[in-house]
Amino acid sequence: MMMEPICLDFEHWQVHTFRPEELGRHDLLVREIHQLLSDRQTLYFLPEKHLRSVADAADWLKTAILNFYCGRNYVHLITEKNNHRLTGIIDIIPPATSREYYTLEHYPYFIEFYLRKEAAGQKLMSSILPMVLNALERRGIGQLAAAVNRSNHAARRALENSGFAYQRPFDSLQDLYLAQLSNELEGARRAG
Image (cartoon, rainbow, N blue to C red; front, side):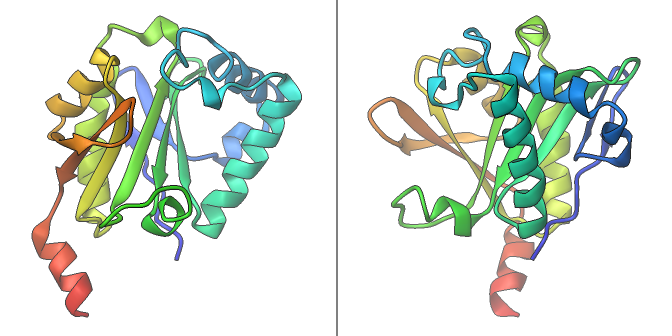
């Protein structure tokens, strides 16, 4: 089942999926994705996400769009309002997809996010994440998890400021954080 896209509007930024407006700037968006996902500072804690070429970025975007409509994961773009430039990416990963990659006792939705290095230190994710959590709660999602590199202090702070709490070590490099969004909705889904 496909999740309803998240559309958020802030003073300087927007959070949205790939919209018809992006078709007119497709090639530029592909280059921006390549810049974001090939930047060493952005991917310092996630080197496995590195894209080697603009062609890889084009493939990444095609896959992200297809995966959204297949329900495998839900990529949302963070763009600047004034010029539509890509500032970051938020990826929501449903339990069925995380089961393919992780062995856990319980499989919540997961979130990953990446920001352009120029956006670092602006507390952007600390302001956006609470709104994303509210949007996910309205969609019936009861828990959201994040696996964060222990040395990534900025991501940990953004998660903690948004209501995530440390749970336990996730693997040798990362810790698991969890946000409890709504017990009532989660309980109603299990009962129904």
